Image (tube, rainbow, N blue to C red; front, side):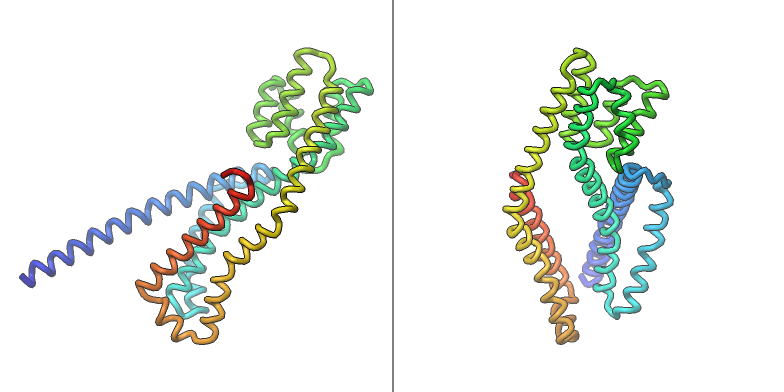
Amino acid sequence: MKLLSILLIVLATTALAYVLLRSGQRLATRYRQQLLKQSEQSLQSHFVFVRSQYLAFVAWAGLPLIFLAAWWLIPSFWLAALVTLLAAVTPLVVLRWMGRRRLETLRRQLPDFVLSLALSLQAGLALQAALQQLAQSLPAPLGQELRLLLRQQRLGASAKDSYQELVERVPVSELAMLVSALQMGQSTGAGLGERLRILAQTIRARMTIEDKIVALTAQARLQARIMFCLPGFVAGALYLLDATAFEQAWFNTLGVWVAGALVAMLLMGLWWIQVILRGEG
């Protein structure tokens, strides 16, 4: 009977280790794919061309070093693992934030650009000449995208294909509206300047309404972030007050599961509040 119990324990431990190993392998593969995809998209959108394999190698080589350094500075395995996890997630968060900030900057440039393009067309310039003139004076990121668009057309790409690639590179609804207006104006050949002037007013009015919504919900968003960070600050203060009691309470199997559940619920709550404030619910 004792031998059977030992055998069952060994089999259960082996099965659990196999499941954890397979899950860790899938998570590592998914993390690598996400890091490669987001690094390529974010860096190429900033016109920085670096092979993503090099970035993945730096990430995989850096995580063990970060874990060892954290374990040496903080004599706690769980805190070192938490620091390593945060270090692994940080590049994905930073790259996504860079992409969102670039798209928002480009979006803010659109009203003035569309209005300038409309005035240039009404003054008698052709569309290509007006685009070339504005592309040279516009700063990044819109100026970069326009110069790339014109370079593709000079190399033989059709206007329709180059506009389609621009919309795919820059997934902004206002830019899609501009491309539709340009294609419609090229096909009909009349009234493009007036259409663009109306489009510029529409985009500006839309951004004004969105800015008002952001201002009205600023307090709620700040409260959500404070409530999300508050448990971490309290945990840090408790650890500084009595590290031994804190480790005994949390650095065990039950404490780790409770902490994981708390973090998961905090993330779900923060995500749901952001969805409500963006009006996607």
